[in-house]
Length: 306
Image (cartoon, rainbow, N blue to C red; front, side, top):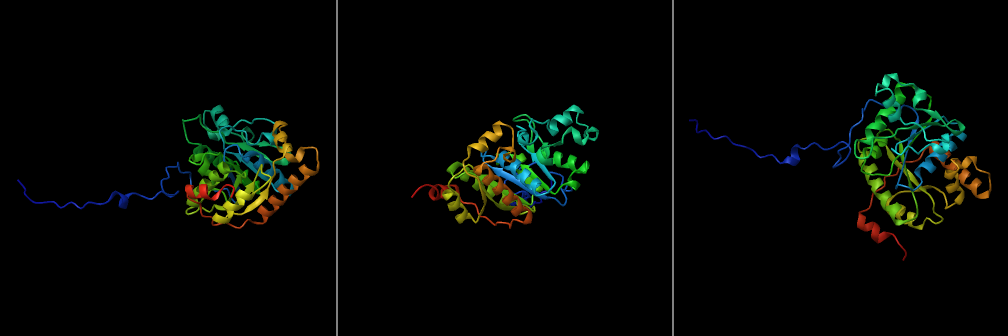
């Protein structure tokens, strides 16, 4: 019998655990790093669910097109309702198109999943798996891959990702691997700003390994911006555009139209001009903002009336 003693050195688990490339705690499905959008300027629009991201994205897409840019809008929500004010219908999604060919992507034609909307804006709805059955991030990655294979991205100046509101979903994170600037839509209320803080945190984690940077804040459905201003001053964010609580904006969704198709009046014209100003500013270049998110308890102390 061999009585020799074998020394065992204990190694802490923390020293051998690989750090996730997408930030601490990330379990995101990783996309193909070789799939790049190319030379287009890419913006990802974020915000709390129901805050008006799709309305903002669609009107911003039209504003870019009014400046003579070739625009592609990609809806990233399984509800696939990002682009209906542009196309006047709920379009088939990339998932629908893939199912129709039994997921043989090589059989797809561009017209199977890309549709032209108002003023020439090209529209894609990524769609997503049924609730609780898969990762929305995978679908976004496949959408970009298909667009690349069909060479649509080569003929595009601006790409806008309209992103779903769930901060923990892969569908939320996937566009950040392609975007140059992330824009956050918020209202002048606690819940919207609380969600914005979480988004700032997520984008900060992504920016350590990807090119995406915070571009700024779009104040929406708000006559005042005092609470947004408080948050911006503490975190280093900046408001790029301000859209008031305007009934014409609500009615534009009900009529399946963008704001640029409504009968003009002074209020509508002011909002149209603000979108055109925002598009021009973003095209010329939005400086990256090194914002620092707040702790949850600090937001409670910060916001509210004195």
